[in-house]
Image 1: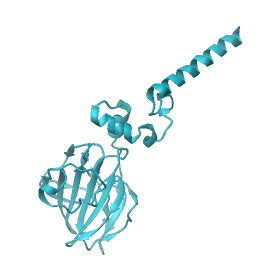
Image 2: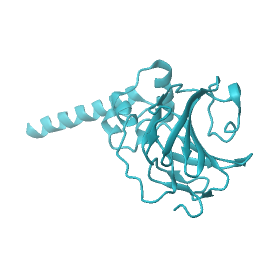
Image 3: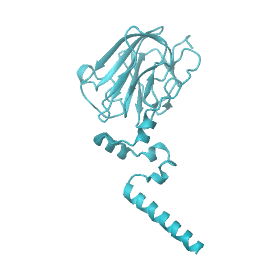
Image 4: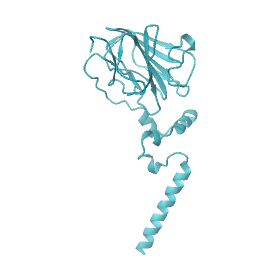
Length: 229
């Protein structure tokens, strides 16, 4: 009798597991979701579906809104303003455009690349775009994608951090204001969901990263100026 009961329990468990997998297909079943890495736990197709209907899983939102403490490394090298992958670092008209592409699974709080004073916080652009930034990093005025531009006066010149929203996300928060003095690695804002961050710095800066590198906001050294490290 005991063996029969155990068999029935196992069978019911298997049926339940199969039913849950079928119900949630093509997305992961709740039974295995917690064991998967974030990209497989919440596939891109599923996240984009939530963006259209607004019905996010609370667990995904908890993960997305994470804001871990970061400790800036010693020195004066410029730090990455965002988590993500370096997608380009071209120079135009004396300005280096270091572009960081963020995914749905990257931490989305942005940080100051170095110590300085905020001289402007501006809203720019009137277009929503998707992409990894290189194709729109140099666009001017209204042709730019919607973004907030935080401009800093620093010891190495004027530096700007551009928080660019995407076609999917469309929301940006700036946490600093004009006239405010901010520390190297300090939080400056957040883009909600997939996005791009562009760090504009003088072309004389020596870049410490390569295209394709994964960087962390407030921790990864991305550029330096001779004699400032």
